Each structure stands twice: as C-alpha cells, then as structure tokens.
Image (cartoon, rainbow, N blue to C red; front, side):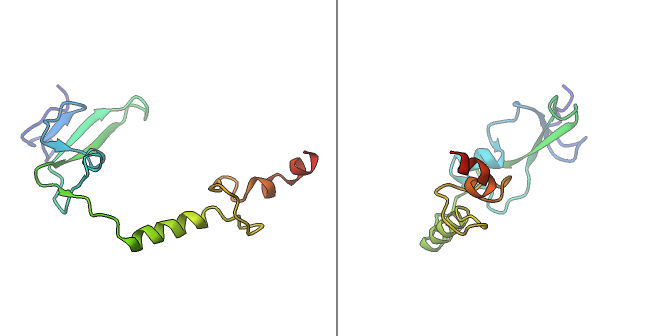
Length: 123
C-alpha cells in the first residue's frame, strides 16, 4: 500500500491510507460529531490519499487520539446572545437598512428587492 506507514518512518507521523486508520484515531470533524474536541493534544497520525477531484494531488487529513480528546465546551448565555446578534446582522440589507426576513446572499451583498429593482416594478 502506498501510504501505509504506521511507524512514521517515512512521513514523520504514523500514516494510513484513506479509510484504513485504526478506530483509536479521529479527524476534527469526527471528534465534533461525537461531542469531543482535540483539547490541546498534538496531531497523532495522518491520512493520505490521492484525490481525483483535486488533480490527483496528495491530500492529508490529520488525526487525533480519541482517548485524549475532551468534551466540547457548552455554549454560555453570552455566546448564545452574540450568535443571535451576528445572525440578525446578516439579515439586514446594507442598501435599504431593513430586515430582509432571510440571510442575505454574500454574492448579491443586498436583499433581492434592492439587487433587482426593475423586476420588482414589473411584478
């Protein structure tokens, strides 16, 4: 196997091919799905594979030990309030300064009414 190096002699870290890592390792996303976080630990191993999607380049995903992972910190009331304010700000159109009722698209940068005023007059 091309990327199989469990001792880390070739790549510096224990390296496994895609989907063949032991169960004691997990990526950040896998840890988060399990309600865990790396908790300050260093990268313990890595996955390597050639991606057809990215021009056959070698892709790397870092792995962390699940037994050393810590639980995710709970959201505090202050964090919930800050998140609510941030989401509310994403709903306000910078052009007309009104609440659009939805999160404004970053590609438009303004509400649909301000972005396409001629279509609103025709309707």
